[in-house]
Length: 619
Image 1 (cartoon, rainbow, N blue to C red):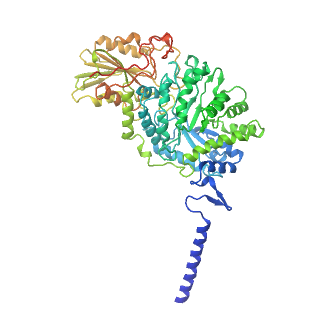
Image 2: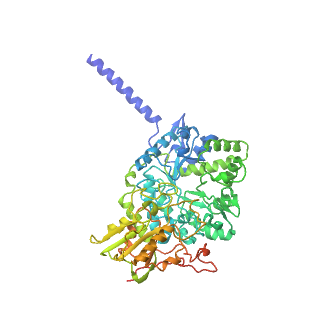
Image 3: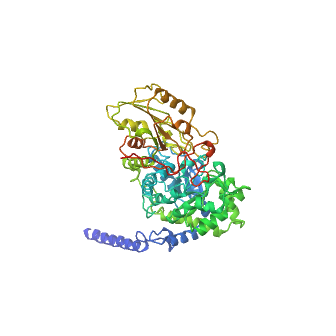
């Protein structure tokens, strides 16, 4: 019996060994393409060249699978999460305020992984790419680092800082799984009335042209690096030059001016390898950009050689003239590769299929669009690593990241008046009075596109308000009194720091056709300071210059803080002298409302403060 057991065991061992050897010959080693029915799947081979992977995958895709790749849906409008697989959706997004509950980094990562797991169940296991408006940090996520808005970054004139901001933003976005930001905005704001002025780096294209470094920070040297994400240059093109500053309006200028002012920043962005470009809602000389074959196909893809993919703005093709089929046909034939629906995706898919089957959109155009999208997915490494890299999740809102944002605040501040060298303030003052609606309001100092689309006043996310920064900076012996409305101000205070300006807004709601002066509550507060006879330092929190000519004479100092984001202690760092002012105006400051719009180079140029103006502390 012992012998029989040995013989049996030996036979079993030989059988198992033979089986293992047989399967080792049939199953490819790690990194080799998978084999199905004797055919190698090149697109799933991470060692294959990306163009070969794209070609292989494209050849395997049905028309419906290709259309799915061209379709982007906001997560809140999914009829069912399973529609991601049913309709082969290539992309999801979170619009402003489209957040999971609770709004934490971990919940965002879980949500992303859930959607990705559904996408990977489709026949070809093509991952989704997820987009978000991380326009001044990962601003939709509670607790993320929120940087100054672009207008403040324009005041820094520091491309290296922009690169750092891009790197930090990429890590925080990647920490929630998301692969793609709809930023940076390369809009050149030419009219202060435009509600998106603060999304612009300034009125002259020189600043935005030098800031391709933020794209390099976001995308790194290799998109396959898990700490990088895809960037988007937006909004092509001329959105900052509309007549009257109307959002989604008409930019009525010559082609030469369009090229010199509004196209110029895109050249460096394209040379830096920006992965996607978003089209503007606006028109150029009455022709909607979303259907502009010349500017998209001929100039952007042809002349400028952009080889990434082009995405539409939110439901923007609906604004094209004609019926819906015409909207779809015109936008895609003009060269848009991915359509942000964002809700009625079934109708879009059915309409696009009909247009292709009827020959009004060619398969070559479809294949070109899908190839561009798939190329970026392969470059991002989504086929190999489709899920969230949780090593970055813990870095969201970290002190290291907030330190970069605090430095950005310091460099963005512009000193416009400093009568009698009242600034820098001593940290050892006896009594300091702080007032104003924007002194202790992190929502106001962060502005629009923060947690929600239009932004909200109040304690909307974590960070440091300007008041808290002041309290953290002065000596323990200094008394800091705060009252938003200025109640309690007396002549025995050494200084009053009044933090006023705008409340949050975003596109549409931010257009300002009425008075460009300060709010009545601000004027009332300033009058209290004047009557008290206390030296007054005004800190203006705003997304654009305001008309302050009549009030300026009453102030001892004026600091333009723009929309500094969550690190308000950066303001205190400078006004109390730990750092000098280095910021200069990225926009001309109008003397009167009648001067708006005013830009450097205008024939009758007589601003209150010129483009590039900014005082510093003298040694």
